[in-house]
Amino acid sequence: MFSPAILGAILGAVALVAFGAGFALESWRTGAQIEKLKGENTLLTSFNDNCAADVQNVKTAMAALMQATDEIEIQAAEMMKKAEPQVKKRTATITRIKALPSVPVDMQCEAIKEEQKEYVQARK
Image (cartoon, rainbow, N blue to C red; front, side):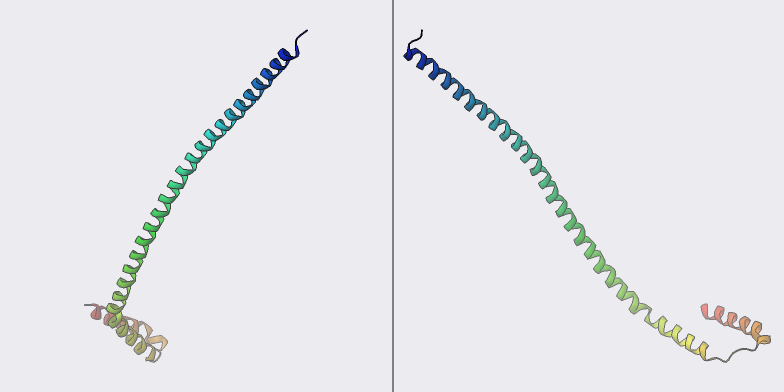
């Protein structure tokens, strides 16, 4: 019915079309996958940029906290030096009070009144 040359040509054409279609389909799939990967890459790049900005913000905040801590430590040391004379005075007062003899029970009210008077006079 068909000559072998025509049959060969038809089979060759069908094979060529099938091969070309398969190649085109694979190319289309690869192109779609590349587009998907580009989209994912864009998204991940955005996340990475945000992460880098967050890391920089944390570093800046930590530097500010360290500076504030250093300033507070300096102020605390200055306040300790400033309070030292009062600490010595109050320590001496406490030592003197502890060295006093116990007050008899019937004289405790009078002793408290006297201590209150001394305290009020010392505050003025």
